[in-house]
Length: 206
Image 1 (cartoon, rainbow, N blue to C red):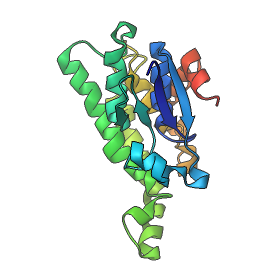
Image 2: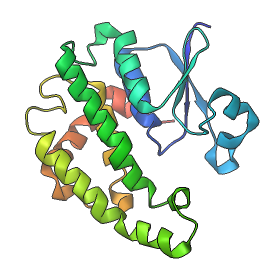
Image 3: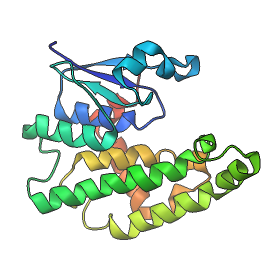
Image 4: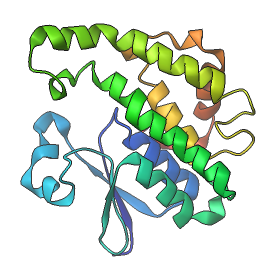
């Protein structure tokens, strides 16, 4: 198998993986997973990814990798010449801690808007979760604004890394979650800076 295959759907964190592949100059192909038709729950897709989500990345030997927190460092290490991750172990761990925060806290806060049924069956409980999305996301981005940005143009300071595509992807969800990005000047500047990168622009067009 000569190519990487990225299984993706628009509006998901698969965008971060797609940006990373573009930045790396990777030879890959896209496989659209049609959520509207329930393709993520099809037997064929579940055989590839039992989680029934995207992104999933089939690598050259046929192995299927899942979860952005795994795919992003994989791409950075697989295409090391692109310098998409810190070489220093401590800084690499810091990047991974940021990825973990986005995945375990920020993405979960966002998911309460449309995926409340993952956590509750009672419609009032789901409505209560939905009502907290905007304030929870704002709190998350206040922390990102204060602690992760401001030491350089990128999440890791002067070095652009795969973490930047991940932050960009989740930042793009803020408006839909009822949060005005303008309240976070550093996040806004980062988002606008990302829009200028050819790899990002290419990833945003299907």
